[in-house]
Amino acid sequence: MKPDAKLFYDTFETPAGPFSIAANERGAIAAAVFGTYPALRKCLKGKEAARDPGAVLPLRRQVEAYFAGSRAPFEFELAVEASPFQDKVWKALREIPHGQTRSYGELARALGNPGASRAVGRANGANPVCLFVPCHRVIGADGSLTGYAYGEEIKRKLLELEGSNKGC
Image (cartoon, rainbow, N blue to C red; front, side, top):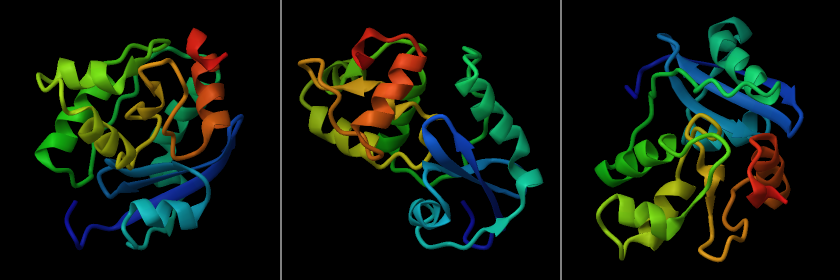
């Protein structure tokens, strides 16, 4: 994301609580979080965004469709800074099908680096665009709902909504 890019955001209610999205002038997503503007600013690394619901409306509609039970994949352009490894992990996260989960170890093996499960966990935790890059679909090797920035209860709700038996 360019340092001088203008950012716009909106916060709205979902069945899992308030959700905030920020996007740049082209509508590319810069951050998405469960929470309000202060939580969003953390993902924006302190950058300011102007409240403009219309600027993020296409992204909001996708989130609302998701919570209404749509299985359509999110369509978006990312406007986030990522290391090459984070980018690989986030692409792998987007490939986890709706209603399925993967462990950190499974993702590491899929990336061709079976010893990198902790690094995968760090990249997963650094994901600034939850839901759109479905970090909630990553679970512990033992099936536990470990490591979700917004808490186990929200992770469980998302997995249950998607029909995953891991949410129960």
